[in-house]
Length: 511
Figure 1 (cartoon, one colour):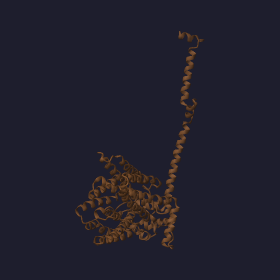
Figure 2 (figure 1 turned 90 degrees about the vertical axis):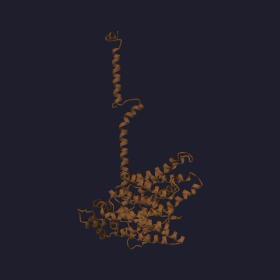
Figure 3 (figure 1 turned 45 degrees about the vertical axis):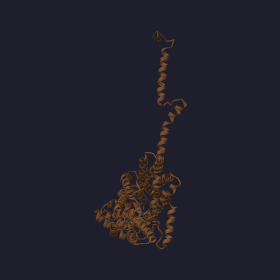
Figure 4 (figure 1 turned 135 degrees about the vertical axis):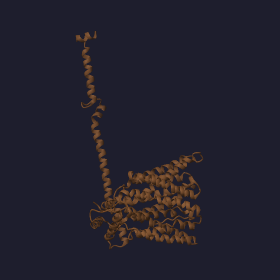
């Protein structure tokens, strides 16, 4: 049993209870800060949206310290934004605020998923999108009453005052500690988790943690501690690119996030044309629609899996945006146009939320935070392209926006089958676990294909005598048609004997 399987078995025994609540609250509060910085520009009078790259804070710091550091930076930056009178400085601080929000969201998300048992991971990950939807609606409501953007910024950013002390009380990810071979800290965290969740293990905890660390060391592909940080990063990237399964994830996942982010924010901005020019109503409706999408798709994800939901959301959402072109502009069926766009946004928003659960599960623990940050960077690039498509292309062709976003959804759905399914499966700890997962997936698919071919061949073998008889006009002795024809021939012969002229009895019967 690999390290990943053993740790997920340990989490399954631990269950989901009181110990996971602090990390869950950290992620909820971090998600509540995301809306005011991502889509709050219409109310905060910020004409330039932030687009940031993510520093790998959790490479040596861990999940908890990265969240605490990002929270502290965000608190200072928000206060400076509310006090500065200079517009260039305000834009610079806005950029830093965006970086700090993403820097605390990515490790917080990884911390929660890594501490959640596999059976609950799908529901927890999906429902974590509701704080973003709720904060979006709340931002619109508060913005109706507070029109001064500085005060609105301070009020909507106030949950950071709760997030910072809660992050201090949250334990570090034990999965990450095991991967870093920090046995004493990992054992202390798991002992606290067992006490708070009121669970007892059959085997000694120290022995189990030592076994997990040894298995993680045996399968780890990391560089030696004597190497420099840059050289270690280069070696690790090269080892990832040489591995087939990891290479596919590194190539496909960023493209998928670029397309879905461009589609998500593009439809979100363009949806304002179908609802109202009132920014408060626009934000409230967008948050409400996303909440509905999360509630509807969450139970389906556990049964159908990640790949099916992402594929269906992007493909159907893109198709609905293409169908919107068929509705005449000046006709009385404007409600059809509105319905197609809103339903398309629901599907895209649901797929986007599933991908927030799906993407971290694709990467191993040793690089999960950095991999998730990397795909978020590509998503930020997609966010930056969405306004250009919405406002610039619309000036050249009326159909360009719908066609571009529709094609983005359909193209993204075509990339999903290249990624493995992760639903109800253990999180990979190392690069070798990722490769083993892909080998198991390919083996099961090849075995299923061989079984289908064997069933087809058996069916063809059983039908061969009948097919040959049907094509040649002859019947085999085993064929039921042969027995029927023989009975007909025998009946005809008997009739012929009875009507033969040389037979007297036959003549008498005829007479």
